[in-house]
Image 1 (cartoon, rainbow, N blue to C red):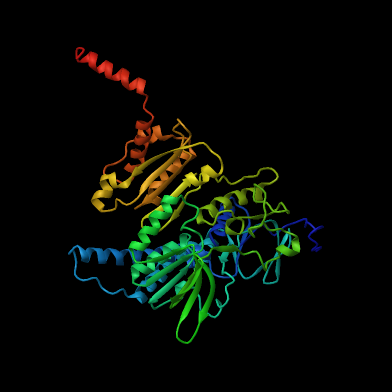
Image 2: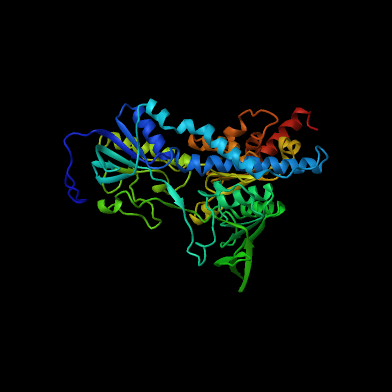
Length: 491
């Protein structure tokens, strides 16, 4: 077989319709859909089925967060006299529950399940030999199309002394069995904020160092301020606008040297969690030999249909970007499979216009579409309507009135450009806005929909009502007043 990336030899017959590289979120959806469409598909995974989401990401982090919330609620209950003194957290038991959660969900992503669905699962290292051939541990397999779903891995900054620090990442954090007395979290994005709060609730003395001037830089300023205040209230020492310089390790102490406002100081720690982002896995499976190029952000460069320079090689999920969400990976996988199996007769492209995102702090931060920062940056005319959860009956009785809803619309129109929710159950509440945006339902439609009482979802209707009041016509209101006066007999 001619392995030149410029003149690959196309076989006359293929063993597979599709080979999928990687059994994380994007790869599993790709293989499932291809099998459902009765294609002959092989799924290749060199590590654990389920990828990062199951083993080191979404599942373990949310299990840890749940345990941390229960610990915090226990302390609050004791403060209100509703229980005895709060107990010390058994961190080993917490981490055992994390592993039990992974084990309970693992059958959903298992080799046995996918084999039963009609997928040929092969365990081993994949290497793309040509656009038409993938080797699995050296065994060649011809295929009409290839989907690369190799995921991403933690990005570790090039700090002097970091290799000797014994740092943790989102992949290695789950090996802990003893609660660090002092945890330093490097990075103030979603993962950094979530883990800083969780470990503080579990009993660690947590310091969060963020080089940027605020937390959650993709969100509006008031969102960042709300989360920073809540973290501080939970005991997290939040150091924004602090630039890491080096890590100093001695027999007595480990510390991060940082600079701030022209001064340098040390932040000591017992454990260091690096949460400074993730980079796509693009090395070691043949991209270079095939001439497949990367973007400036190191994702695989694709067109709008997720095709690389070789149209039958596609990429989806974290390795393709631009979003690193499990649901974005699944959405892309559907488009990649349809294009891979049916092009040039049919091609599908992912639509990112309505893509929700949730940060699972307490309160949660949920957003879909534009926020004020993004709309302003793009020069999109907009107005904002806001509703405070402190006014919502259900939030009041639950003691969860912290937070707000913020909705962007075009000036004078009820079309939803975007929604941001900060509060309890924000991720669940966001679904109604995503549905409304996807199907062109405006705020008038939400206002005209009956919502059960008392629920958090009522806040969605309440913010629509606030928009309606702000856009009530003075002329129409004046005419109504005169009408009712006439009905009263002119008085």
